[in-house]
Image 1 (spheres, rainbow, N blue to C red):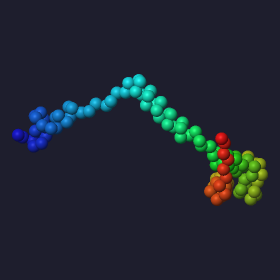
Image 2: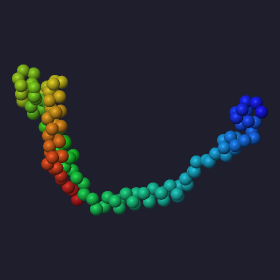
Image 3: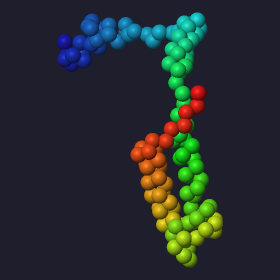
Image 4: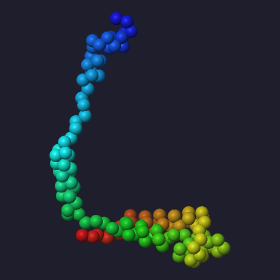
Length: 121
């Protein structure tokens, strides 16, 4: 026997060849079994959701603050010529950074510290 393990496997008389040729083939799903599986999962998902109410508080607060704190829309800190400018519809890198910090602070206070919740049923 030359070549050690490889030579032995190449000769076709060992576990290596049987392991390679007799591999398990992936299971093919029939249409009916796929439909039953999908139906079963959607039924479970619906059951879990039935008694819950959606909490829209974080979504509403985030959208309102995002619109109100857009730099240049209502106000801009720091402005181009003054510290605070109102309704100039311009922006800068510094004002984006300041408005981002203000947004993060207000979101943190309103959602985590106070815990604003709006439930729909």
